[in-house]
Length: 469
Image (tube, rainbow, N blue to C red; front, side, top):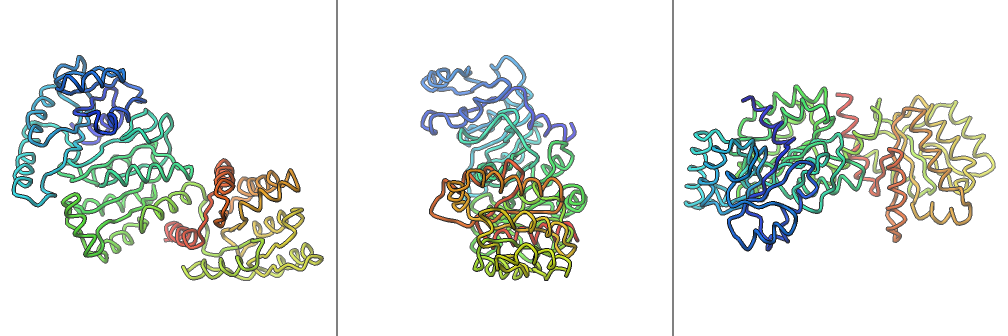
């Protein structure tokens, strides 16, 4: 069968079996992760004591996968490596759609026994014709159908971002962190040691997946670099791809070898691959989220020129320095814009060269809205950055009850009518609750927010590079 059809059955199963879960495994963690699944869930466990606890969850348990009374599309497996061959033979008889193998302890250990079991697995799986993802992985995440890798993940709604991760923990962490920033996953996969299915297989699938608009990848090593490079070149003009490469230092390379048994390539080779393929390089999970957030929320930037509005002169200086250092520009405006700004600020005394230091006019919004409109029309500005402390919004609202709604409304109207990228800086403060509330309110209007100038600048620069090169 075609690999894409095989993967489609695994990503969109109707029946799921969880094999080998235990009470001691964080109270049946794997089964808890699929309790929200919209299809049918079965358990496979030979221990009668575990069967009692499993059925108390409302999930039917069988001692063998062969006993499940209907076809199984996807099986998640966490059993001792010594009994894996017997289990896979049962899967072949059952014609299971695909198996994600959490079990580890193969070639990545470097031990003779681990290598022997790896060789046995590599020989057996093709003979049986079983589809196996892993080993050493947490498998599929499809929140739209409630198929999770653990109880902590959201469910019931999907999004436009596909995520491919060689690390199970990085899949879970990205899904959780991205969700806090309004980013939802279409389909995610952790594939571990990649004995049979590797990153190019999943990239090819997500490239053709209609629910996926942006693709993120965490990768430690690759077996078929030419195929990956070709797929990246073919896909990046249609869907942005953001890659976080693990193992780019000597210490990191050692860690990848013991983690997934991957052989790490040099950082220079990877940087060349990413640059020539049109993909975007991310340096860690935070930047992966930052870049994805901008790709998702912003209209396509036309250039590198930034217009800055702040209520504080010191922050104007800091942002101008930070955005300039990464290769963005903070240019002077046209004479027409300065004439318009002078009318707004003549009675106030604020600075408006770019950055624009708003000062006290924030309180009455007598200058903010027209200043924002001027930057929206300014031909020398491609993206607008607005800095406003979340705590200030909360404090001002106590004096002017409509202040917060006016701020949000002004920015939301800009995003809808001007079509120019805009992001909001929410500098950190001691009032975390205020920051969370303000960030969530901006997310409702599809406005990306950042608390760190450097992270915002680096992510924006990479997104502009993607669109203009």
